[in-house]
Image 1 (cartoon, rainbow, N blue to C red):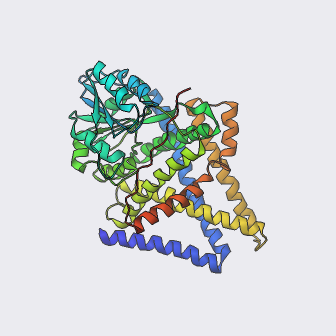
Image 2: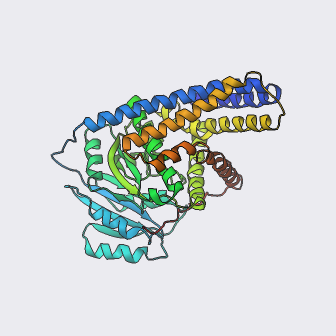
Image 3: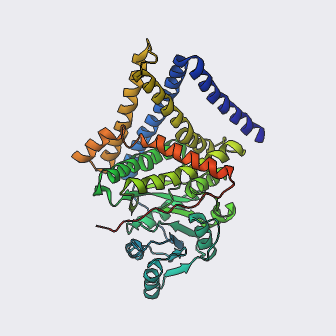
Length: 435
């Protein structure tokens, strides 16, 4: 098993080496190879799009089944300096309609603002709301806080919500019904809407991105491969499963993606429930967005490292997640770099290609497919507006291109931390007051 992983790593390294050698000796070879692989990637995501659309239509026609008995659920809300949003969040939690035992734990991670005071008011008012002061410790971050929350709670399921979330009243019951229908389910995964979508162009772009990659693509992977990914919030997990896995990896910043791999590795399912909706606040400024996505990317680079260095990630349903990680966080970025180099060299007239038209066609095709995905997502969510259509048209040339900068920034920080044997710290996302 370890030998297979080593061989796969060597094959991947040789693939990258071939690109580098080709870049030195034969630019045309690199472009043609990149074009072929990029076409394969576009075809895969187009297939996911179609499957996702089919799944959404099918789910809308499927009636919600009720249960005779509803198992107990613990809601875990990690909170560090969340005074700006925590009141609205807890109010939404106590408004959840659930016929079984429901306990709400506000896991106060050493907040220095008014988070403790607000949470304590709800603790004093509602019997099922608990203000829990998490002891200080290392490494800092959501994983350690969730592990502590699991240690002081006891119900059959736990459901994680971020401290800025406002789930709809029926969100939890939809997750429970889906999870209870299949004994092999480790839980269930809902969907995240952007509550501050209309604030500015950035929040609109984030909202549209979520509609595509968290909703349609998730639904597509579930339809085709019966694999789902935890989203970090509005996610339900069986306590027996997390106990079997030994809890969260405290060093994983992208704790949801890391846990997804271990759950899938054990043979459990994570069904997608698009109609289970929570509303979440997204970054409203570019600086906050960059810090948030840098943390996400560092967390996913940690997972990529595990995939390439530890055995067992390239078999069964886990293969789908492993390829997804490598495709998004390695191969796609390499494609972008090659395309940028080709574009710059062409602008500087350093070289010219006789066969440039097929390559230009790939540029147009990728733009068309990307934009079509945005339109398809808005059609399923009924979020078509003139401003959203305009933003969808320009997203490929603006928002999508930020990925290269974010990847380089995250990679440098990750490599530097590994070199200095430093623990990558948790970079909290700044909140904004609701308008």
